[in-house]
Image (cartoon, rainbow, N blue to C red):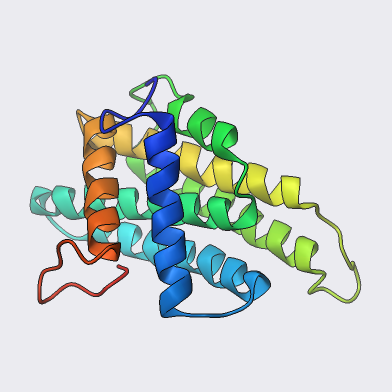
Length: 192
């Protein structure tokens, strides 16, 4: 994978910035709280992806694909929130995988969970939430962990979706348009 089909790296980054700004308008909080909320949102999306994986029958594959895209996009918005100059790291995370993995999807899902846990640990360290350890991580550590979440999610997406680039690009476009009020189904929440 070299780049997402939907557009240039600049367009991808611009769309993520638009989504971040829209979320900021909907939930006006300080940057530290926004970052915490966005990292925690990755966990929600990851949980929904696990539910889709565990649901019986192949009919849930489209839901798994959508939820994996949501994990990637949520992590990308968290990355943008952590460092709005981390465009190169994001593009590297989106492009550095070798296609189909020999690892079963269930193990790939566990890897996403491990990377999400590391991102939470880095967030705790950046914000010095652990009084015993204090500021044990840097913002660069958090950015690296968020990129790991994106990368492992892309590998899983590639395993279940024959055109992961196109699918992720379509999901980015859907979320971007919805955040700008361009399209929204009556049953869709503003930021899901």
